[in-house]
Every structure is written in structure tokens, then in C-alpha cells.
Length: 116
Image (cartoon, rainbow, N blue to C red; front, side, top):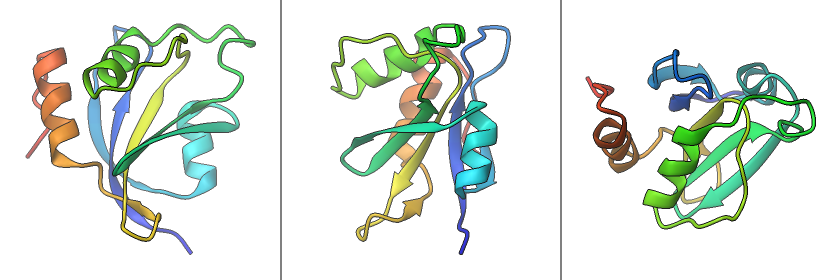
């Protein structure tokens, strides 16, 4: 069973814009977006997905995602590599639309217009 959700996608390459996109929040889609097997970071009502081998395979560091993590109060002493996909989490732990406050925070941090 797949779920269609609005995701916040933060590319590692600064030349690519941070964006929101409606995706099929299935494992194959998430793996395609992060270019490999996924690792999840969960915080309250959202989670982020990134490539679990990003550092090992020398994906570029994702400075913007690291900054966004810290601004949400999540302090992890690590470097995040590759593109990162943020999704919301329903009360039952299922995938959901990325929370509006996270989109708003990304808009403010990255000077981007992401919401409709």
C-alpha cells in the first residue's frame, strides 16, 4: 500500500533548489530520491530520510539539511550527506504530509517560496 504525501526535499547540491513535491511515500520512491538505501531520523511529528551510505560513497555534504535539523532543536554531531527527504508522521506512525511549520522554517532559512 502506498501513500501520497507532500515532502520537503533538501538537495545536497546548493545549485539545486529546496522544494516541496507530492510523492508516493513508498520505499522504492524514497530510495530513488536519496539514491540508495535509506536511513531515517525521527523527530516528533516528522521524519527525514537520507542515504545510509552517503559518507561512505562520498555524496556531497548537505549543509542545508544539517542547518534545518539544528533549527528544529535536533542536535546530532554528524555530517549529513546526499539529498534529504522530510515527511510528516501520523498519529499511528504512518507517512503523512510534511508539517507546515517545517516548510515555513525552510522558507525562512533558505529564502525560498515553498508553500502554495
